[in-house]
Image 1 (cartoon, chains in turn green, cyan):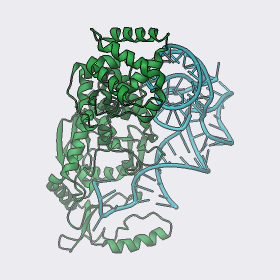
Image 2: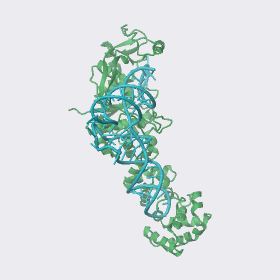
Image 3: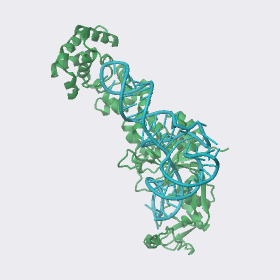
Image 4: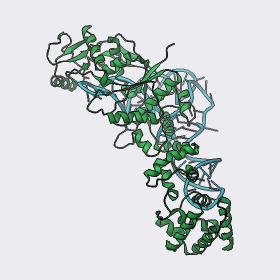
Length: 470
RNA sequence: GCUCCCAUCGUCUAGCGGUCUAGGACGUGGCCCUCUCAAGGCCGAGACACGGGUUCGAUUCCCGUUGGGAGCACCA
């Protein structure tokens, strides 16, 4: 049996959309599992809306997600002769004809038809006229069968298709000579030997017309698999305005590509009760029959959970590498160090995103004099009664000969005992405020250990000198 | 409006006639742990849209209703 061939065919009209990303992921996974070839094709026939920058954004998004392709990217804007030749062939075989109706004329007739409550399809006025190339400005229309069923067996939706007479003779070449989307798609899919077309369900209704195109081109249609759409949090179509839709948005917000892929693959697909899928599992387990038919909502909270899961599992070195740009972005650039790795380790259980982690790492990345104190934290924990205790601790720590968690804990215990068995919390919280400026942070011993003796003591002294006790 | 599609907890889903007092996960409420925040553990609330059939038996099959979605271009 021959290897399957699939394709992902985005329009570079913005950034990589999460719906498109999922379509690409499904195509990729399906193809990889079956050992086929995955083709990337840029549908940029709409030159108004297509830019090199957005094409780069789409490609970059795919690469970030770990989706690789075997052929392409091909650009439809570079394949015009192919479409022109196909249209000429259809014309020569009388499977298409020239139409001199203007859009204004058609609009009048369309209105009249719609007014009767009927569905409009082109009325075939030019169908029998046999206009030649010299008929003046004209479009080209495909002769679509007027009876019978243009049906297919969708790999996800099952028996699909519609009555041929619902379709009408569609334009395949504009008056300006440019080919229409459907023509270009079908010609390309035939030329590229695509065996499985896996795409969004918004194309389900278009498929019948494309089937007519395959027939007119004497080509065997591929198998089709339509994917339910991803809808917004309100159940409505994703809106660029309301919903975060671009993959790049999530990337810059500090989400990991594996979390993104895991999130997307589970919207509309499942494998029993399994929730966590590595990239490798996706490509060995994904299959079309398990794809859902109902549109699914993208739940950001689930993404957060997934992202934290992958942050918790990530090897220390890579975590730091991923975190670095976010630290710089947060205004606290810092060089990699064993201490930073330690900070990342403490923070991985407390961060949903890398951006959040960078914020939490601020206490470590910021210089000892540049960081500020959270007013609420100071008011709540920097009590007059605590000041002498903190002072004691600062003295004790400044004399410490070893600096590790055990030594710091011992110092705390000694100070606490000296102050008639004060609870640890009464000391830990003011120290936390002095050293991080915040009421919440990783464990206080760990925090001090990573900060080092110099910085810890300096911050305690600074707080003692500057903070108003209440 | 017309054509097509879809319908299990708030969300993603398991379920492919009896195994369902409907399972899991996220989220959510409570408890435990605890120097804070998390993480973690335990417990809880939470759904088969509705109405008809078919069947000994429907979450599962069929038909309506309702609700949602998509498509109806010389856009892609």
